[in-house]
Structure formats: structure tokens, C-alpha cells
Length: 226
Ligand SMILES: Cc1cc2nc3c(=O)[nH]c(=O)nc-3n(C[C@H](O)[C@H](O)[C@H](O)COP(=O)(O)O)c2cc1C
Image 1 (cartoon, rainbow, N blue to C red):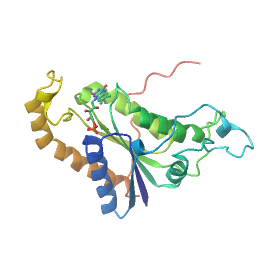
Image 2 (cartoon, rainbow, N blue to C red):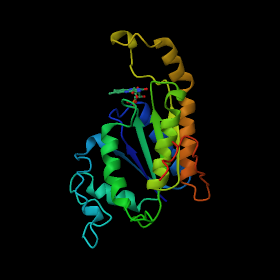
Image 3 (cartoon, rainbow, N blue to C red):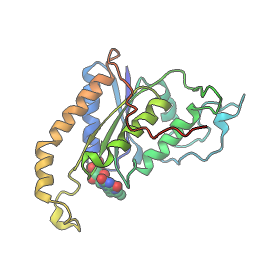
Image 4 (cartoon, helix red, strand yellow):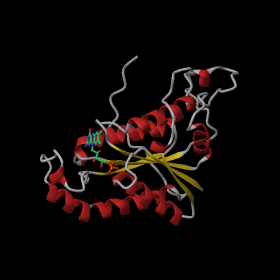
């Protein structure tokens, strides 16, 4: 099993990176071959909407035609068994860097055909690792919807989140007194290790072929009537 972790966080020793590293350790414990990629180290842009990936008979049909710092990585991801995505929440979304990457990975896989067929040779399992300043309820529905998009666009997906994370090493040095610094530190010492343990478990489960992932439609908005 080949497992690639795509890190959408800028901080290499922050919360998100810690979760992804734990998840990869979990995947390795199930015998997977693992790799961690830092998107902020790569030079690339989001989808330009050229639609070459949809051109029937075109040489880039079903693949991204843009050539830049993620071209080889996209191909490697299409061939992987499991993809792990990590991101801090930036303004209620994944980071721009991860968003741009997802546009390039997701769009070539879909067609606008009536049967909505996919172009990648197989479904790819995905795991999502979010971190946020907010409590879980704030983004619970968004996490579920992001996971459903992943289910539809790539393959069976599961997510986890570390919430109310430690953002500053010393809160007193920053304009950040809306946070209870002592409570954040305590949570980092007491709850975050448990978050990393959950990440390990999710990484191990996703790298275990027999592990079953069931879709959760509970946060889907009502479908518009035709
Ligand atoms: C540019 C920026 C935007 C952010 N926006 C949000 C936000 O909308 N909601 C939130 O809960 N946290 C927000 N945060 C906080 C981070 O999501 C949180 O601290 C996260 O755990 C940081 O992950 P890291 O340690 O891997 O960098 C933001 C942080 C930054 C730097």
C-alpha cells in the first residue's frame, strides 16, 4: 500500500504537521509505504480552467495539462492507494495552498457526462486531518461536507479534527488576548496527544484494506429540485 500525506499547512512543526506525522506512523504500522509532502515547498498554481482535461480525444484527457511544480506529484497521487490531507482552517476553509492543489487533483477526475463518470483508474481512499482554533461544533458540518466531496470526487473518505489548538508559543507576546492562554496550553498538553493518537489510528485504519468506510450524509444540504 502506498500512502501519501499532502500537507497543506505552512508550519512544519505546527499542529497539522504533527497530526499527519502520527497518521503516517499509523499507516506504516499497517505495513504501508509512506511519504509526506509539504505543499508550501512547491511552486504551482490552482486550476486555470483551460478544460484540456475534458477535451474528448485530447492528449490531456482526464489529466491536468498544466505543467509546474506539482505535475509529477499529481500523477503519483493518482497511483497511490491512500491520500491523507492535512490543513489548518484558514478563514473557514482549507488553506489556499491546499485548495489550489485540490482543484488540480479533483477537476480532471470528473466529467460533465450524464453518468458523471470518473477518469482515474481507481477510487483512492482519503483521510482528512483538520486543525482549528474553534471548538468542534463550529466546523462540524463543514468537515462532514468536505469529507462528502472527497467521497464523491476521489473515494471512501474519513476525517478527524484537532480543535482549540495552540497557535502561539507565548500568547502574552501577541495581540491575542481573546484566548485563555493557560487553557490552550493545558489542552495542548492533555488533549492534543490524544488527537495525535486518533490520527495514528485513522492512518492505520485507512492503510488496512479490510477497513470499511461508510458514507455520512448527515450534513448534506437538501438537493435542489429539477
Ligand atoms: C491566516 C490564518 C487564518 C485562520 N483562520 C481561522 C479560522 O477561520 N477559523 C479558525 O478556527 N482558526 C483559524 N486560524 C487558526 C488555525 O486554524 C489554527 O491555529 C491551526 O491549528 C494552525 O495549524 P498549524 O499549527 O498546523 O499551523 C487561522 C490561522 C491563520 C494563520
